[in-house]
Image 1 (spheres, rainbow, N blue to C red):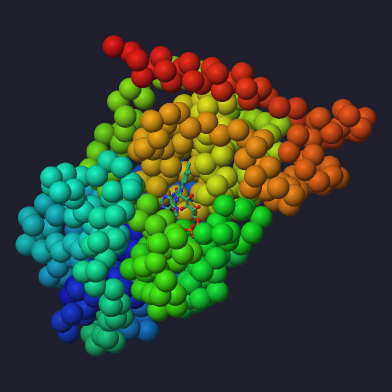
Image 2: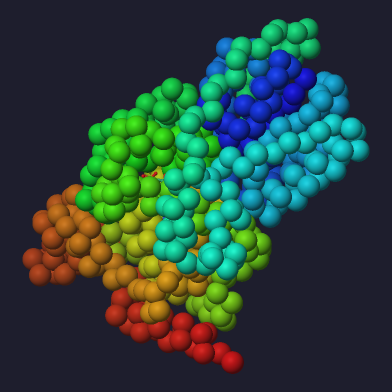
Length: 475
Ligand code: FAD
């Protein structure tokens, strides 16, 4: 029997570990381990836990059609999870365990543990690089070094794409029903996490539904991605990140579908090419985190970043979390995050810049809060996005990028449609005044149930520059 350990690869199609396990006529059994204590330590959002649970229920049905039972077990943390898998493999007489690589520090240690435990029991361990277009460590500079900056990494990826096999890995053939498999099927218990979950039925969770979303996006909207992607009031991005984060969708499937529906992705500046570029950002951050384990230990990519003396005012942090900063675009964005578990990319950049450079709060506070709320929470992308926004990561700009939250709102939500959608108190503020509602309220003697700005952007900007300069120039 072959055991497939599902982790962040919750799909049947284009799953390298599952395909390899099913290559022979051996019976195949799937296993997933809920690790509540580990998830709590990693701040897994209840929205994402809800999506994982919903996806597991659908995956169980999809695998059942192939005569592959999916067992869901519970272990406190990764150490126990490794032991549980090894014990289950022993009990069921598995010859080998198959899994797809994970690159974060704790995940790597967990896999080293299970590999050693399985070896001691005489059971083989096979892993596959399945998470990215290009596995970390495979895209290198001419000098054989890992890239630290996105643009040359992207150029190297685009060159390497010519040799990338995009043909989808087929679903396994229907397995023979053995008595062991029949027994396992008969003992399957309902999937009920003890970890807190939130109902996410607004998101489809079956494989066909997810692939339909991908197809619809590539066919109908990818061509306009470059034009629409920065405007949060529009449906301009794919919203496929929750599926990519839990591996319900692979980036290969995304690119193969893009190629099938929209051949323009090789032409620079097209919508399709810009969308591909974002998938490459995903690879880039996973490369950065895999090559720099210190990042998993909460350290800044740029070492001087550790010297920034953050003010860390907890009252201001509460205002930011609750969308009560008095800056409408920031507050509307935080409402979107708090109410749906997802936030538009432009807004993630705005609120992250605001937290670090207007409120002068450590980016790690924001990173943790995002992780605890995001349905698409992904360590590498979240950490990369926060470090980039705080200017201590891989942003190639030689100056400190500081967004002005008012002008960002005016530029990317010019008529205030997005702001009014999320902040009912500002519904009656007309036109562009919505970006500075207090100026309007005072001028026209109106009352609004909306906080005044908690800080003055111009003053905070100067303070932030001084803090960053001081940290950078420390001997
Ligand atoms: P699309 O614009 O349709 O892009 C397609 C896919 O490309 C996305 O689904 C995603 O997998 C990938 N992608 C797009 N932009 C980026 C990017 N900048 N970095 C890495 N991958 C990208 N993304 C996450 O998946 N998980 C996170 O936890 C996360 N945290 C972030 C935190 C901050 C502070 C910032 C600035 C960005 C973060 N991002 C994160 C990246 C980005 O905001 C989201 O991937 C994107 O908004 C998802 O929406 P979409 O699926 O519509 O993306």
